[in-house]
Every structure is written in structure tokens, then in C-alpha cells.
Length: 176
Image 1 (cartoon, rainbow, N blue to C red):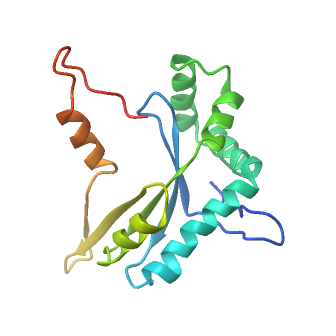
Image 2: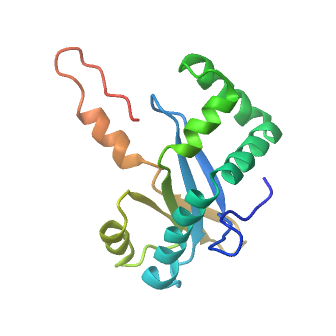
């Protein structure tokens, strides 16, 4: 997917590092993904950047919709998964799916090499919606081979829903 600026001309504009469409619940969820380095100051750099994404999304939802449309048409496997989700979840068509995805409140995800002590605290206190923070650490041996350590995306949600099943029917609630 080619990176494109979002936001109003003459206003706040930025380029997210990526987008993630979560199809695991009854409603699709869009995540704006930002890759960061622990050396970046949590409040001045990371939190400000996430806030600017929110402003940009509100100013130009049609641009975001176009970016997602183009990406899903280029990446056939992702497009096929979305089409299957659309058919099984009552969407009228692909355009309706994209409208719901973009106009619904989106979430944010920060992928970082090491979580600074105050990052999660800053994000939790300053944003009305949750910001997922994932730590991705790389360990290299002398031959230059890398092994990555990370906690799976939304792992805490999976643990919570597995422990909070209905005692009567033993089913787990759907994430939305």
C-alpha cells in the first residue's frame, strides 16, 4: 500500500505507518498503526502524533476510505477476507462496509521496540479511547539472524473473553 497523507490541506496532515482491519467481532474495527522507537519522547512525539491522526481522520474520512479501498483491491487475499465478512455480517456491499469502517470510531495501535515506563500512562490518561501498545523486540545472534519477541495483538482481550464466558451456555462473548 502506498503511503498517502491524510488531513485537511493547510491543516494537520500526516501519514500513518499502516492500517489494520480487525474482522474478529460482530463489527469491523479499524486500527491506525504507528511504528515508533523507545527513544522518542512519549508525550511530545508519540502522543502528539496519535492526536494528530485523530484530527486528520475527522477532517478527511473520504481520503482514508479511498486509501483502504485501493489497498483492499490491490491485496487480493485481504479483499477476499473482507468480502466473506461482508457477506456473513449483513453489509449491503463493499462500499457500505468501508463507510462503516471509516465512520465508526477507529482505534490506535503503537508498535514500539521498548515500552518506556510512562508511555502507557500518558496514553491512558490523555486519550478517550484505548491505544494498543505492542512491544516488538529483536534479538540478533553473531550471524545476524534475528528472533523477535512480542505479545500477540489484543492478547489481553482474548484472555479476558475466554475467562468471561456465559456460565449457562458456556459460550464466549463476541468482541465488537
